Length: 335
Image (cartoon, rainbow, N blue to C red; front, side):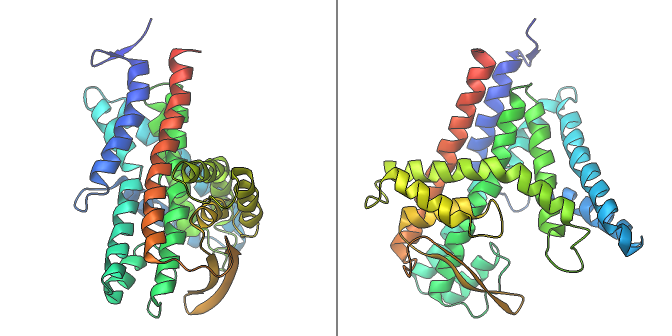
């Protein structure tokens, strides 16, 4: 017998919730004054970090791994339990689904940087870029800011939308609220990686499990993101001087140059689609790092390419999300 929630069959909720979450994200972005669950996850991660620091350094690796398991499963379980609350559950499920996505926020921040660059307001552009990247922005010129924006927009298309949406859609195939639980388990893993996953002596042991788990969970979504970017690029008439399979080969080749097994895929796809270079000298915490070059050699990100990338990112995000919903619909209503 089919379970009904507020008069609607559970499969309708399972498919409708991801679609509604995507629509709300595109419409509202990240409202500044709204409480965001990621902040609570961050506080939990910080609290566990402080507890682990009280133990001998030799135990950091084991305790860090235990902390990752507890935080990831605990976050997913709490999200799932909130969705099962009587009456309030469906509303909380919709909010948690929407809050776990960041395409609207990403596009909004990208437009702010692009607008500042278009009128020559470099100071505003630097501050806006600083919200998107961890690199030093104080001495960035316009070319460096444009490249930083392009790299952040491309990488965060996966981190902020495709990967969490992948788990939202995947879990929804098992039931309307399971997707929300899986989404927030992934968000916890991503938050752990951003807070613990540094390659420094301080975090080498503590953050190892967090970094590896994030690599595993984002592996398939990163490649889905790259494929979506290249498909949309062809639809938009980008990269016409190369065939689709040549673009795919170039993307795969360049992506493997990156230290991260995942970040290079959406970045390389965007670089080749837009015909501009990513990578090169980048300053982090006062130290210059020469990142691998992705895309065509020595092609700058001008204003037209930045605006084109914003359109490409938006369309790629929407189409990849709809494609994942399509797969979920087949499983829910056909199989």
